[in-house]
Figure 1 (cartoon, rainbow over the protein chains, first blue to last red):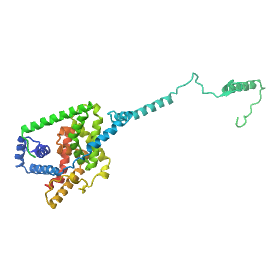
Figure 2: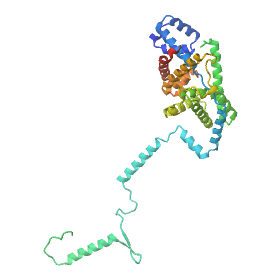
Figure 3: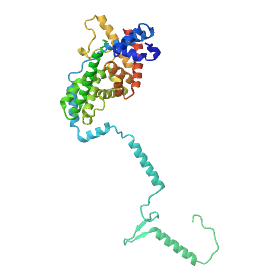
Figure 4: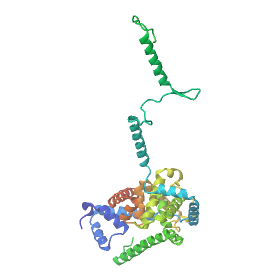
Length: 173
Length: 205
């Protein structure tokens, strides 16, 4: 048998030897080699020591009321409302909500950017919204329309006025 | 450990296979509403799950709470159960997940019983040799402390791999299924863990 250390499989074999999972033929072959190889013998002895040491670690007995407590928890679970069970099944499902929220947020952000760059008009006219004054007789008057009318009147007055020497306009006008 | 003959090994494998098929069959009955089958599964796997968790978290109370959570999750999942993997693989996958979460959350610092605390479990703790002298008892207790400390020092997945390999006698392939990794990764975990344990425990024999 080729030395396991040289073959690179010493860990596999020594663990299997200590665990007792080798076939009788494999064990006999390995033990014959171990008798002749100091390195393998040391490794085998150490692994067997670990195995024996772990055998020392026994465990406490399970509590007598373990099943009773478990069934009580199951009963509590059964009494929970239907919608809570659905939510729990979604929470434990393979599908995770985690990637959905940031993706949705990204979509909303992109839509917002699109709206800013391409504002959607809500009415048929492209004009800015105008201020409306409610008159006494409920007749609505467009303020912009009034201003335009006043400008027209002013312009007409200027046309009618006699020509005068140009003068500097007062500050603020 | 006594070496088995080939025929004994074959018989053992067939018994194990029958047991595995039985587990899946029982769980399918649980899926169909058979509460008795769940009780049978619980009776069969309660001990191994609790003991595995006990060695993982080294606290009996916590181990039993986590084990209850394991079986509760099995019960809650009964409606969608499909025998795509061995029942014990699924069972220990849940148990390992819960134990690793518990260890990660740092509750071990608050709830873990002291390595030096050998009381509190009363007659439930099984000593290796009750008929020995006081000196032998002290030696045994000292060895047990070293063993528990050595296991506690292992990283979570190495610890789980060693416990499943040593005490549950799981094969590499099944441990890989529990831990969700490849068989070669399991071997790497195990051999690294045993190397650490050899350095700490070889002097005990």
